[in-house]
Image 1: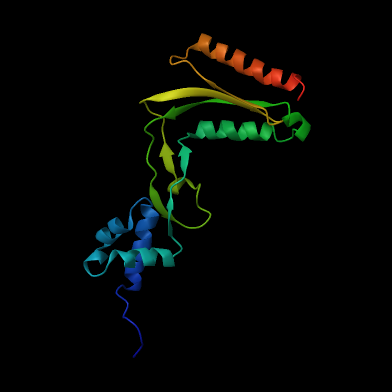
Image 2: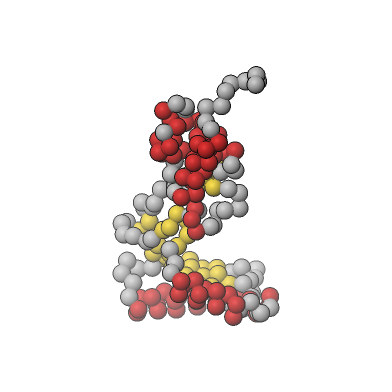
Length: 182
């Protein structure tokens, strides 16, 4: 049968193979998929990218999520369910606090091909683990009414110095609540 346009370089079987490789190894680049399937021997890299796009797989930066085990996930779910009945007024009296390490050299972002609405699915997220290097540790807190506090922690943080950070931070945060606004 005669038709207009350039002939297709890949068969349906090759296009399905490209998608199967993506499903098995979502962090593979288009070039790696093309080399693995042998398609790059007869076509350009753009063909592999086009096939992936036609299947709804667009290049995105992988979201980062902490690496959690099943016990940690269960604890988080339990916490959420136990506090889901609090009213807005109750939440205004809650203080959230946490420490965070800010690192000079962090893990670089990685690109991934994924479908829409898959950003936080386990198979397409980049797992992160905290590691050493030059860094500073800060403690922060935020209250339901919007008041907040950020304090730089000492280089070596033991239980006594952590309690000192908490005393200073929480005292300042609660003093802000008691002092009248100008």
